[in-house]
Image (cartoon, rainbow, N blue to C red; front, side, top):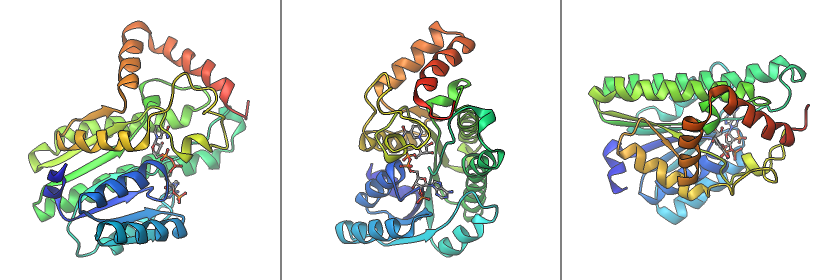
Length: 269
Ligand SMILES: NC(=O)c1ccc[n+]([C@@H]2O[C@H](COP(=O)([O-])OP(=O)(O)OC[C@H]3O[C@@H](n4cnc5c(N)ncnc54)[C@H](OP(=O)(O)O)[C@@H]3O)[C@@H](O)[C@H]2O)c1
């Protein structure tokens, strides 16, 4: 894991105010990497920034940025100007879950900007910049096991996560010659506020398995990035589940399986 520094001395982490992104920030600071923390909730970023500076003696800057807004890249460009950004963890994401036709379209538009457009723009910005600087780089994108099939009552979310999975796997191949590692981390249920405090669905009490711990998931993600794996499913149980479902179930059956589970969880039916 010390090898992470080969990418450069600074990393950008999006969605760093909570859950998986916050854990990425903690583990990267623990490796002596300076950080740019991005999310909307400034007080949480400020608090985390102070903690990381004191505990790990690294430099930390943060910016409150809404990644669902079209011009967010200007703010990221400003805060990263002149820094050797070698690693980007594009993790921020969200979901509107429930009956597709009962959720306002503008909510889905915001989600597409956050889950699809922001991932594409950050990947493009970072790879272009790194190629210009002729330096190695690491790009980690966060998808979800929902990406493997259509998921009723999380239709837009699963479709967006499939976009991220395909984008990252393709970039892993394309950017190899530029020495830029690209890995898509594919978490199953993971113990974060995003899962346990979700307003649209009571997921914690209906899940068929215990969520993975966030520290274990993030450690796996960073190891996969160092190995330059195109994608990595978090947690051995999730890897087994994904394999078994692929072998035993048609995509139609897999969607129906998810649909029955999601229907129990969601509040908008
Ligand atoms: N937990 C799971 O079970 C699970 C499973 C599969 C995939 N994932 C994926 O993992 C990633 C992290 O999720 P999590 O579970 O850690 O959720 P979380 O605890 O809710 O954290 C989400 C992070 O994204 C940020 N964010 C949300 N909307 C944003 C926006 N418009 N602009 C900027 N930042 C925004 C949030 O910060 P602010 O609110 O401060 O902006 C927060 O830091 C997501 O992409 C999610 O889809 C999670």
